Length: 327
Ligand SMILES: O=P(O)(O)O[C@@H]1C[C@H](O)[C@@H](CO)O1
Image (cartoon, rainbow, N blue to C red; front, side, top):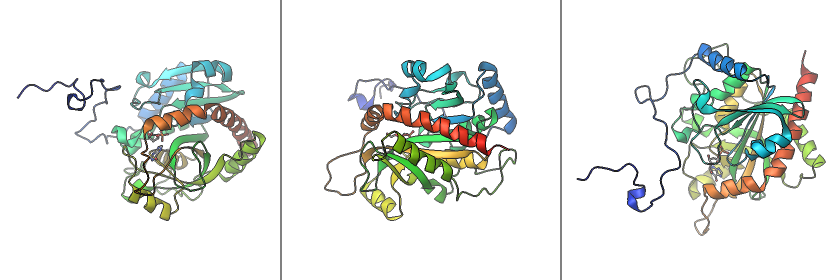
């Protein structure tokens, strides 16, 4: 048998080389050797030594939704913008998904100190859930008090249209039903309690503010509210899976966010979740359409201006809420 050529893609049918090379997973521990609190303090200290920004608000950009942190937009919106690629950050994973840049952006948005993850980590990339959520704990150590987690998601609610924004009211932790949880394993009380409550996961005040801001921006017709769930991916769902999710009250399905929110709530961060509905989930076998990542990225591009305006205003309002609540 001829030696295998690693550069030949898809049995030679496709000559395009892969866009990224996946990082190797530590098979001995199945990637599960966790970093200690002290190790994450080292990561946070490294970042604090690289930037003078002391962020209050952290933003996680969903698939195709981070373009408003790109250079041109950065210059327009962010003062003192500073980008630190994930490869340079000790103990950080690297981003392997198209539409996820792979860097932290520090700066001031309307005078509010922020850090944005331009690219998140997904379970399907091969990272265990605790590692997907490591940046959330690092944000906490940097002083971040509020997390804005955005994502691209498929719409199940028949009233949702492509391009709608869904304020996340709650989530269903489907992966948690199977015992996969970012808090699984020994608990370090310095982050939070062993058994954190989750019934107030998505801050009520923030959701109210977001609806008011939607009206101010005259985008209330495309802003919805609903329940999100995350499946492990990377495949999109079957018709039967979508119909089951609908039955249990899911409005939008994606491949992220839930575990990040659990991690953030565990360490007492305030959370706001926002889904961009990038596709309609297929609920019938007669339906011709198939979900695809290109469409997801296209809708992100289509909505980038609205997202920029919406998130920028929310950052300011949320920061003022924090100041008001401060002792
Ligand atoms: O990072 P998010 O949750 O926005 O990404 C969604 C889920 C998959 O990564 C990808 C599918 O197109 O978009």
